[in-house]
Image 1 (cartoon, rainbow, N blue to C red):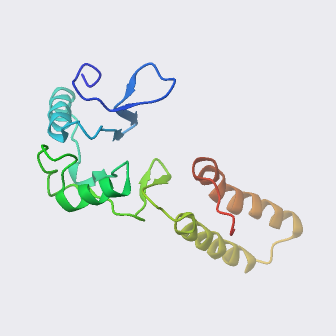
Image 2: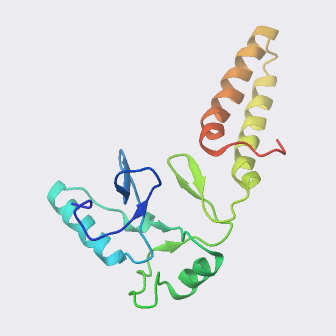
Length: 167
């Protein structure tokens, strides 16, 4: 349905098809070209939801403008991706510069500070380690706690996000 549409999406270098959507379980990420009309995507999603019985949660929708800083500002101010486009619906959130949006455990956005992404994880690790320290663990238990807490809370984010130099 989407691949047969007029939506342009993004052409990935070396890729055969254009990228329009990325689906994982109940998460959908859509990648629209500046020339694409959000209303066209909304019509496709409405048809798909009607046919499948699913419900699209438009209230959880975030728009991350991709392109120049001038384009980001223009989209945020006008709620349009182009001069001849209809404004994006008011109930859609448009992410501002520096605002991180979580997609499948990774954080995306324009000018997102890596430390901002990692700060809550580091705080959670510190809290958990302090709680475990109260139990007076043995050296072997400390090793297991470090692997479980530090390793468990950082591995995925390190792979998908990278780690800032300051930590």
